[in-house]
Length: 455
Image (cartoon, rainbow, N blue to C red; front, side, top):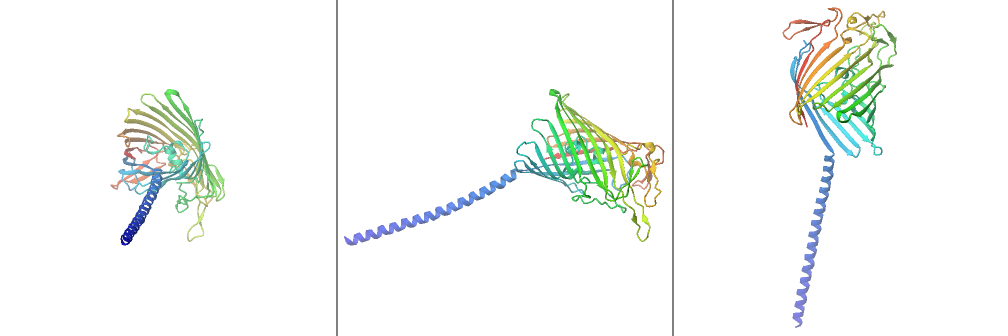
C-alpha cells in the first residue's frame, strides 16, 4: 500500500512538472508571437506614416511637342522648319502641413534643362487671408502667371517676353486675399535682373549666374486685381501692376531714347527701370462661352553699357558704351470663343514699341555723335522699331489630357523711313546672298502645330 502511494505521488509530480513545462513553453510561444505582432504593427505604423507623406505629394505636368515653320529668311544655322519639344514640365507639390506648401518644377526640354519653380508658400492660420512666398516663382503679372498649358496662344506677347524674360524671379512675395472681399493683392521683393543679359566690352554676359544677384539693388513688383460679378452674364476682373526697379551701371554716361540727352552717372550707381500696367479680363456666358482680355504697359526700361577699358598691349582705351534708357509702350488684346465642348478659337493682337521717342522715319537718321574719344557714338536702329502681331489659334480638345493647337502669327514691323538705311545681309543654305531692307515689311510670320499632353 505504501509503495502504491509513493508511485502515485511520483506520477502526480511528473504530471505537474510536465504541465508547468507546457505552460512555460506556451508562455514563451505567446511572448514570441506577441513580439512578432508588435513588430508587424510597428512596420504597419511606419508604412502608414510613409504613405501619409506620399499622399501629401501631388505630381502633375505636361509635354508640348510641336512643328514650326518660320517664313523669315534666317541667318541662323538651324532650319526654318523643324520639330521640337517646347516644354517638358513636371511639377511636384508637397503639402508639408496645414497651410505649408513646397513646389518644385523643372523643365526637361532637350538642350534647355532648367529649374522653373522652386518655392515655399506659408498661409496664415488666423485670418486665412495672407500668404508668404519665398524662392523662385512667377512675377506678379497676368500673362506671366497664366500657365503655358492653358494659354490660348502658343507664346506670351512680345512685350511680356521682353520685360520679363524667363517669367520667373528669385525673391519673396506677400499675397493678401481677404475672405469676404473679391480682391487679390501681391507685393514682391525680387533680385530683379533675372534673365537679363549684361555684356561687358568683350561681349561676356556679366549676369550669367541665375542663382546670385548681379547687384545690391532689389526690385519691387506689386499687383492688385478685383473681381466684379456680372450676374448670369459672367464676370469682370480688372486691376493694375507696377515694376519699380534698378540695375547697376557699368558706364559713366546714360543716353536717353531721344538720342540727344546724355547724363552723367557713376560706375555702380542706380540705373532705373520703372513701368506701370493696367489689365482686364471679361468672361461672358454667351454663345457657348466668350472672353475678352487685355493689358497695356508703359514706362522706362534700360540697357547697361560699359566704361572705357584699356586696349590690350596699348596705352589707348577701348571707347565705352553709354547706358541706354528707353521709353516704351505696348500691350495685347485677346478674343477667345468656345466652339462647342471640344473646340476653341482664339485671336490676339499684341503691340510693342521699344522706343516711343523715335518713329520709323527717324531710325538711322537720329543718333548720338560722341565728341569724346572714350565714348562710342550710337545711331538709332531696328531695335527702335515697333512690332505688331496678329495671332490666330484653333484648339481641339481630344480629351481632358490632350490638346491639339494650330497657330498662325502675322508679324508686322514698323518701317524705316529711307530705303537702304537699315539692311541685314544673309546667305541661304544654297549659298545665295540676300538682303532684308527694313524700309519694307519683313515677312516674319510663324506657323505652329502643337500637341500638348497633360497629366
